[in-house]
Length: 480
Image (cartoon, rainbow, N blue to C red; front, top):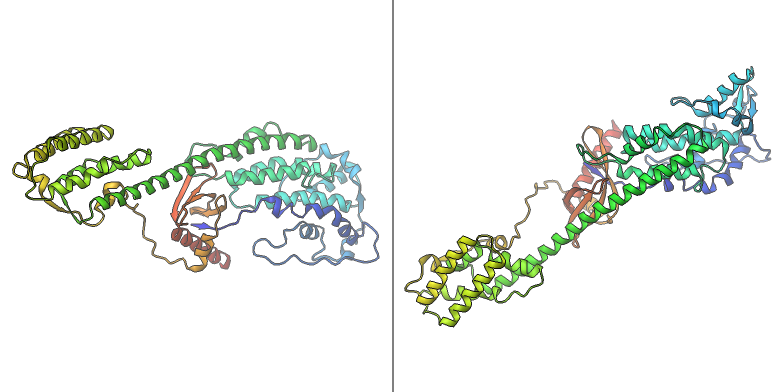
């Protein structure tokens, strides 16, 4: 089952608003009393969009800082001591951040124990905003479809480093900061993560885990540069591998399309030579020995089709006549040489071809009186006869009994090559698929997996049915 998902990078979902984050941070801090301000800013709830609501940076910060569900008086009842970032940095290397509990809370408790203070300690609002934002960005990335356990393991490795780096550097989460680039790199790795089950190829995230496991120390800023370089290197390798494999798939599809067009040309040319529905045995045997395939190969190679194409019409004209006379010697020699040369170029059934040549030459030299009856008998070609001769049989596909409807077919028609979709599979598994190629008529669609290998080859109605089914199952899951 497949579900159309317009693939949005974390750059759009998470970092798109970070350029404005620090400009708006002062408003949030003033809302918490960290900066004096006569007027309290109005914070509007993020628009309720399906599955993506409340994910903008300001909405995340507002939620994390307690602007929803808590009043300012409630937050100030304990009058905690505010901890500046310089004070936190002194203990940062001693703090071990573990999953399952908010990082800001772990930092505060560590400082309280280290300093033996009885009063509650709280990170200054700007610092807490950075720590919470770093953690939320990791959690949001972890929730992305298709990541699975390996993505969780990778994010666990970088979590402490990113959070500690956010304490040291206010700009680390920005689009130009090391943390922002790091999360963006991990996000870009996700499409290349899922491939067909059972393949021996290691996934990019598994490569990342193996290469980073011995290098991550949790020291924050120092780790950020190392992790970013390693992941960018892995991403570059994977993108190059994906591109190489994708090119082979696309080249193969284009070559096959071109070949089908060549076969169609030959089919049309043969029909001009053999316009009737009945054929002589001589032509039937010649086609059965691969003469049409010879014409297709010549056309693909850009070679002239004559005299091989015209021979079909000549033999049909002779052997279809029950009382034909013997041909002149020069004509027989020309036909003999054409047959010999043709079977040299396409020597698939050479022994049978030699027997056939002898029969034809004997019939041409002796006329209808000595002709082998197998050459002069009439054969009803039937539907699809010539198509089979040139190799244009249609691929057998399972019948699509469900009509996807105009809405889903419009979505299929709007797909662009290079676009990613999410395929939902059995046992709640998913994989990212890329639309690598579709034919000029928009009928045939070829999708590749994260390794760039061919994964699905579907007609447009099949894609539409898959989208419709995935949407229907998704609605049932949400409703249940």
